[in-house]
Image (cartoon, rainbow, N blue to C red):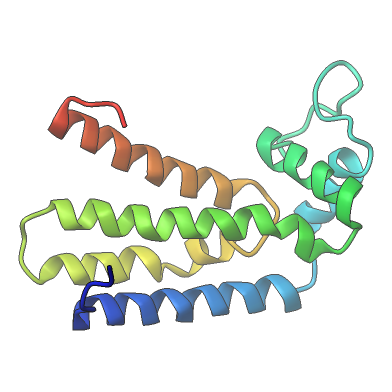
Length: 157
C-alpha cells in the first residue's frame, strides 16, 4: 500500500539525491589523495591489515582496509571501488541524522539543523574518500540513533 508523499518527504528525498549525486561525482572524479594511496599500497593491496606483518600506521582503519581489500580482490583496483563503503556509510549517516533530528521537538528549526549536519563540507568529503572516516561517521551517527531509541523505548531492535 502506497502512502501519500508529503512535501517534506519529497524535499528530503530531493536533498538526499542531490547530496548523493555530489558525493558520487566526487568519488569518481577526484584523484586519489596521499592517504588513500598509502592505505592502498600498505593494506588494501597487500592484505596485511592485522598482525605482525601489518605496518603500524594511523592510515590503517581496520574496517576500511578490510572492505578495500575485499573490493580489490573481487572487483579490481579502481579507487572508486574502494570508496564505495564510505558512499554507503553516507546513506546511513543521512537517514540517521534525519531520524535523530525528528526526535527533537523544536519546530521547524530541526530542518535547519538537519541541512546543517548534512552539508558540512569536510564531513561530506569524507564520504567520497577511502580513508575510514566516512565509515566511522556514518556508523557512529547510526549508533547514536539506536542509543537514543533504546533510551526512549527500552527495547533493542
